[in-house]
Length: 186
Image (tube, rainbow, N blue to C red; front, side):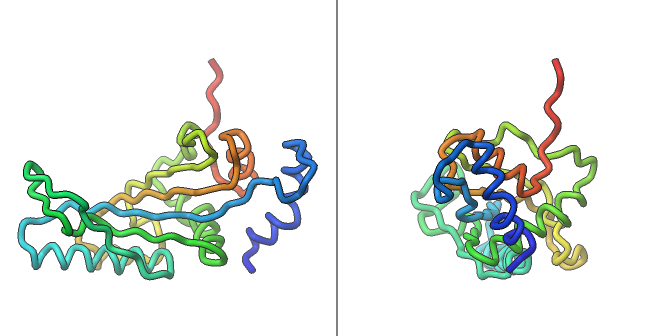
């Protein structure tokens, strides 16, 4: 069990229960899953396309410790030179211990490595208690060898919580240690 998961179970649950005035411990918001997604711009050559997808799959597997799924186009779009079934990107859904390990690594190692980091935006909640974070460079993760990547890619990290509103989800993520940017005084 990770240190962050222990902290959640022993300290954060009782604290959130008091803060949100919840009678039942099972009503306390929890982190359900983390979804990582990397979209891939398609080169015209089919062999180069499969090589790019393979590289991105390897990188995401290194970052998460889990084999990613290749996402494909559902429809053909002539203007984008896209056919149904063409690979569009890769995604991974993390749950359980892998989710907690990734969150720990994200908070303590990866985000502090971002250049000019001032915190993550507070306005990226979706209204139902989920948080979406865009990361500009995959090289902030220590597993990625800078010499072996073909190009720098951005990735999306979506944190799905059981919270029903943004305030509860914000309180949960803040107590877990997410470095939100400071609210600016008007």
